[in-house]
Image (cartoon, rainbow, N blue to C red; front, side):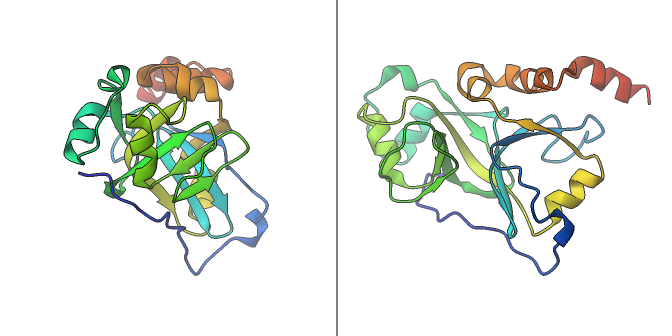
Amino acid sequence: MGFRCALIVRPCADSYNAAMSDFNLTHHFLIAMPAMQEGFFAGTLTYICEHNENGALGIVVNRPITLTLGEMFDQINIPLHQPKLEKMPVHFGGPVQTERGFVLHDTPGNWQSTLRINDKLSLTTSRDILEAMGEGRGPRNVIITLGYAGWDQGQLEHEMTENTWLTVPASEHILFDLPPEERLPAAMALLGVDYVSLVENAGHA
């Protein structure tokens, strides 16, 4: 599972609900409803990096895997001269292209392959950002994932109508200041909902 330069693929499909054409969840969290107890997205918090008429792209931000950043850098032969980064977890970002790395970060930079999300956040998939991180020249805040989550045209909109997800505007504090296990409850708190209570209620439904 190495980090390779990966062009960001924008999903596409033939069908699209025109009534939802102005529905944009870029820079929002998707909170998996407790009823979603199986599959890739059970218990996940997903950050939407892009949502437009062609579909949506996001990364799961609360599911660290056993691979650390230090181990990842060893695998791809990039020197890591920043001891504080060695134990940082790599995350499962979603079920698409799980062999490729994605870096969600603040601090704009001139990287080879970057999707600009807004004025503060970007998603970069090129090796040069990791090389910069290894030398201490990288972004201040990062979440690194293997894989991403993608939706075809109209697919996310359809899932929203089926109450598969809750959604709330994203918070950089939740993304970068909280440990992975606290991000989902904190996102729920933005909605004024206690996630534990929601899970318990779903279990008794």
